[in-house]
Length: 276
Image 1 (cartoon, rainbow, N blue to C red):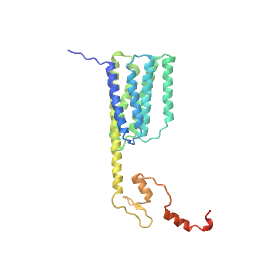
Image 2: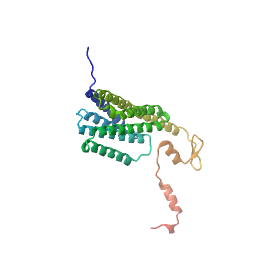
Image 3: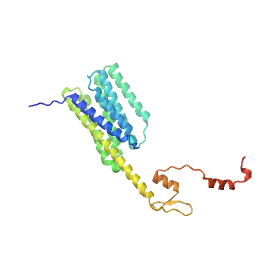
Image 4: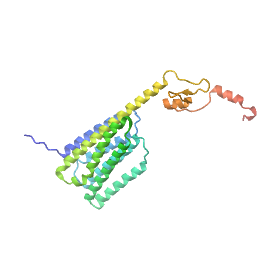
């Protein structure tokens, strides 16, 4: 009978490959010049995750612990910034950049100055877990409309993985649990990576439907005032033609005078007011 043992190297390799596939998928979507806010930050986030699993192939030396913390912290900040942009929420990037800088400096002090690996484990688990739970709250709080189901799906995996990181300081030193813990991490990361792709596809479909509705609105006969040239919309309100097209066709206007109107207004200006 052949026994199966789950090694850390196998999990790291599987995690790296799955994240590489997700990065390729997100980059492929972005290559079509699709305007999805936050997509670039999500690509950066999964790149950090790929690099994290790459360095974990090495031993548990101090510099490896630090690099792993650096990539995981950057991953969480990029995910949060990307989610803020995707949901079109107000975000101060300087604050989150400052939080990342403080986290990195703190970990440098713990590992290379104080050589306190135990405190590093607690800091790593609580900080990353807290950021994941915050991201889950952000998703739950703003899940609405046609994206609600997928948002809740992603939020659940963020929340569970956040709880998993909170127990990291206690379970990480247990040698036999390490493969199980990293396998759980791999599963959660893969789940919300797929969830992000689903969310983006849903957003693209929503944008396509909105575009079709706008095209449909502009087709056919438009009721227009014979005098002031205002257009009546489907709700019965009269709109300036510029406002109507700006709202239904994403058109912006610049104003000028055609040659006929220019000659007309010039003719109305007294000759004494014209500067040679």
